[in-house]
Length: 490
Image (cartoon, rainbow, N blue to C red):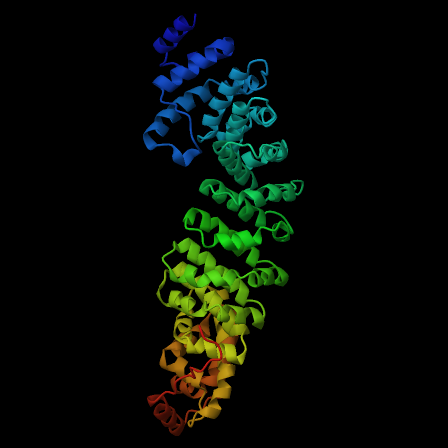
C-alpha cells in the first residue's frame, strides 16, 4: 500500500493540494509518505534554525510549496495531529511540518490555526524528540512578530519551556531551548509573566562554555532588562552582574554584543544601580573596548554606558577618569563614525557639565575642547544643549585660570576662540530651541562680548570702540594655552 501511495504522490506532485488532502484522509500512513515526498521532490529540508539560515535557492522553492500547502487550508488538520498521543510518530511529523511553515513568512497562520496550545502541551510529552521539535516550533513562532509571541505567552508557554532545562539535556536541545526562551522574552513582557524563574535558569546558562547558548542566554537578560518595571533590579538581584562583567572580555563578538547591550540597559537605571556597575569594576574593561578594533555597535554601547555613568555624581565622573577612559573617548569623538561620535560626545559633555574644577582641568588637558566645539554643529538639540552646559561649566572653571594669565583672559575661552568654537556658538544664536538660544547668548555675552560686538553691534551691552577691538586683536595674536596640569593620570 505504501509503495502504491508513494507512486501516486510522485505522479501527482504537481498538485500539492491533492497531496495534503490525502494526508487528511489517510493521516497515519500518508503523512510520513507525503513528508518524504516533499523532502525528496520539493526540497523542503528541515531547518536547523529560523529564517536567516535558509539558503536563498532552497527558500524560494520551499516558499512556493508552502503557499500551495496553505491554500489547501489544512493547517488546522496538522494542528489536530499534534494531539494524537497514541501515534507519537504522527505528532512528530506534524510538528516538523508546522515548524517549517512557522519559519516561513506565514508564521501567524501557524500561530492562529490551533497549533499553539497543542505545541505547549507537547512540551510535556514523554518522547524527548517530540519535546525538542515542539521547542523548535515554539521558538520559530516567537521569533516572528510580537503578536505571535503574545499568543504563546497567553497559552502559558514560559513555564513548561523552563521545565525543559535539566542537567542531562543534550547540547543541541539546550541550544534550541535557550534560543526559544530568548525569543519569548523579546519585547515588553506582560505583567503576569514572572521573570524571576526565567532569571534563575538564565543565571546558570551564562556560565555555559557553548558560545550559542551563552549568546542567547545573554540576549535573554538583555531583553528582560527593558521588559517590565523593576526588571533591572530583578536582574541585579539574580546575581548575574559579576559574570556579565567577566564576559566583557569574551573573544566572540556574538557574545560580547548582548552582554554589553544588557549592561547598557542596566546603566540606564537609577543611581544605586549605576553605582553597582561602577563598584563591580565595569570600567576596568573599557579602555580595551574603546581602543581596540571591535565592531561599531559594541563601541557604541560602550560609549553609552560611560555616558550614563558620567551623568551621575562627581564620584562617578572620577571613576571614569581613574579608569583611563577619557583619552580613548576623545579619540573616538575625533575620528570615529557619526553614531559613535554622538555617544562619545554625550559621555564627554556629561562629564564636562557635571565635573569639578579639577575634573574639568583634566578633561581639557586631554584635548576635549576642540572636538566638543564640533559637537555644536550636530543636528541633535538635546546633545547640543548638554554640550553647551559642558562649555558653561568649563568656562566657569576657566575664570579661576585668569589669575595665572598676565593678560587676565579666561584661558578656556581663548582656546575655544582659537579653535573656531566661537563661530559655531554664534551660528546657534538663531537656533529654533529657545533654551539653546538663551544659553548661547549668555555664554557669548559673558565670555566673548568684545569679539561678538565687533561682528554684531546689536548684541546687548556691547562695546563698539575701536580701542577695545584693537586690544582684543593683540591678545588673540598669542592665545594662552589652557592649563595641562591634572591631578589624575591615565
